[in-house]
Image (cartoon, rainbow, N blue to C red):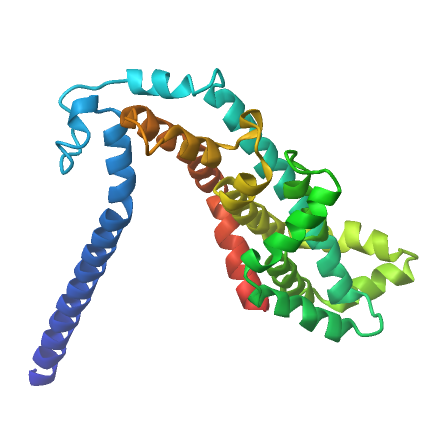
Length: 293
């Protein structure tokens, strides 16, 4: 009887401990979510506030009146160029750049993972070492080369280098490919398949999660890239959204901050949509790559 009472007491204490841990977990998660989402909520709220309220009522997330005119005024842009042009340029930069990066990274990764050639490990190590080089170090020699090629003020300096792939994505896809059984390649070779056939028919369908993960990160990083377009694009008609927003906020004059915040809010929409629709592939790609690495 006493043992039954002790067991019942133990079960109640265990349930209370589990309930306490669950409540603590959700409280911490909700608190962190609020901290991370508050800047976005503040940005959206500020994009809808009247101009005289943006900096005088900073702590409130609820505008006294909704001013949707901020979006129309911001969309009109500057210098006769609307933000439609800037968004189109950003989609060209991020979309084509991502396509080049993912395709070339997959091909290079397949070569390092499956094709035997002299000095493969040394070249792979040298490639990984380039991860430690700050991009600013390469900017001056790259600018000199692109200037000699007369590529300045075009999208070519931003897109053509991506045909060599991205080191981080190459490493990630190599780890993924190494987790695919080599017996599949050998069976395909017995059936008469070439290296190209093995890549397109065997490897490529297996690494879709890794490719989608690389595409999502590449699009994010390219969409928010500010320094590259700022250096190579001088014609306002070629500005991306990031550069256009910097040009839109003139520190030497009075700015329409409502319009600025409205365009900043719109600039977040593509990356948020991509995360919402491809979140499953992103999680799957990161999880499977980590397990097979």
